[in-house]
Amino acid sequence: MRHSFKDTYTLKSWAEFRPLIHEIRRHYGVAPNELEASASAGSKNQMLFRGEPDAEAESALKTTLERRSDAHFDLMQYIQVVDSCINEIESFSGKHWGGWSCLQLIEEIKRVESARRFYLPDKIYPYLVYLRHHGFPSPFLDWTASPYIAAYFAFCNQVRPARAAVYVFIEKARNPEPIPGFTRLPATIIQTLGPHVTTHPRHFAQQAWYTVAAKWSRDRKAWSFCPHSEFFKGKDGNRDVVIKITIPTAERRRILRELDDYNINHFTLYQSEDSLVRALEIKRFDIAGMG
Image (cartoon, rainbow, N blue to C red; front, side, top):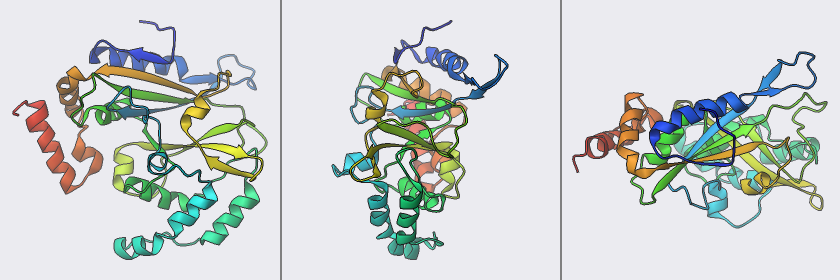
């Protein structure tokens, strides 16, 4: 089955999901590299997935920071907020994210970032991921490298809507450019943040990645967080792609049973005592249909 690609796919059944993912990977998996002499040479596009229980929810691609606050934070303002919490978190958790101060980070950002480059210092990334995984409002939108983990998050909770959704984000590989971190000079960008960070084990179990959407302010000379939807409004050929796949929720039991066969369940993804009990609840009441 070959598709002519579009923005949204409305599947009739779960059985159509795997073939469609295969075709999306085949179609978008490699980006031609114009700098290479060989026509067959290319770079891999980064492909990420996100599950949502309501296919029509307007909040599907909103970060938890957007959902929590209407304020327009830039990175330096957000760092000031999270820095104000670090003493309590380190005291309770016994973890330490030392080696930086708020003022040092802000000075580093001012020195490095420009209209051509959104800059997130590596040294604060583990702390921001920790906060995201523990429910603190975050500018990070979370994704997974696995379409099946994304499908689990779309269906693990009882849902009333008729259809759930799996979103596919394709970050197009681009030619090497002279400034590290430089992508292009648009009104908005999406920065992809990778999996290699020391943090909670669930980050790795969930094959987690993150994206940040930002807009450059000429007046403030700073990048401010903005909705991901502002980026996807663009139609130029160099722009990253998002695809929405909707799946009928009537197949929830079948989907959860199949994913559990793949060892994708609440316990394997969250690895806690609470998640073990949640996984057993889903297995007994949702998959086995005991209630």
